[in-house]
Image (cartoon, rainbow, N blue to C red; front, top):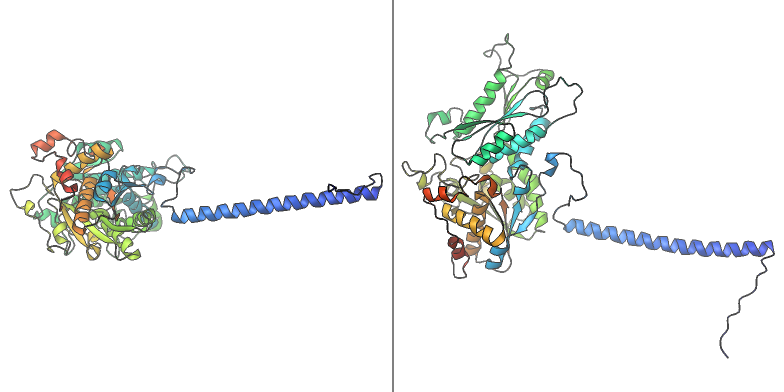
Length: 484
């Protein structure tokens, strides 16, 4: 006999029966709704946990859903790109931080932003006062300063106030790539081009603190900042009695050099001359220690075995990585003619390169076609790197040029000279260490080749300078039997 389910009949004509039925239906609905809600809450919490775990592992926080507040919001959080051709050939992971994607086109955007932010935070600079920022540079830092200076502003209440942001004066060598000069002029900077002096030039040491040789460019920028500020001293005020409150020379000294102590109102209203002093300014180090370094560590998920860089970023990034894992190798990439390779205490401890001998130089300052890294004096920021540098590699012009052409042909990467030099040093490190089991080597891709058309990416210029254009140099370095 088949099973039959017999439900009791309910007389819906009775009010009590109807109320009972409604209660049963309501209870069932609430139970189903509560169960569904609890299930949704559990799903939501599980999704949140997954997002949180992914966020902890995620290298950087993506910005695709963000609306950024102006140009400065674009600085930093640059992606990390795997250099496929080099990585596959060597059996390692060579990754570069794509700093050329910053709005100003280079890693120097980070430094410029931090320098200006710190100066404003300390009350040394105030927008809308007609103040001017001065800097001596081979180009990239100047472009970054000019870009960010114009972007600094506060809300205006009266149209009679000076224009927002700051003006800039950039003093640079007369032999840098023309593209950098054109970019600065387009950004409204006052560009002063000078012929770099010899390191024995007496003028060069005029304002030098003990144990340092200040480059002529920085001396001129410092003097220009002082001259600018003094132009706004009231006529009744004597410079002999008290220097102007409108002069600021930013240094790493315990106090900031100013002309005199003044009322806060004066400091906020008058134009001031501010010397950014990228080589000695602690803000340079802090930008990389608190920004670039942590980003790189997150992006590599802590797998980085070595960091390779020129003098500009090595101190801040290197010290941060060492603070997390002291086994991370910090490696200096230095071009021909620069003295840092020798000074890095892992080599000779002196600031001299034989290419700098009188009568052997192609250029006036550092004898190399590579721009942006290399220098012949010990700066405060590089001094911070000396204790943590594990090794240093000299990169020749021919090697850097070869790398740049090799990357275009094999990876579609159009990079500048310092980026190419960093990647050459990466190969030399891998060969020296004998790495081939997926070890991760990180570096900085400082800027793109678009700033180097007239020199580094100008074949005619290179031929006249006697620099070969031969991708075979890098191909030989990558060959399995190559010893570097």
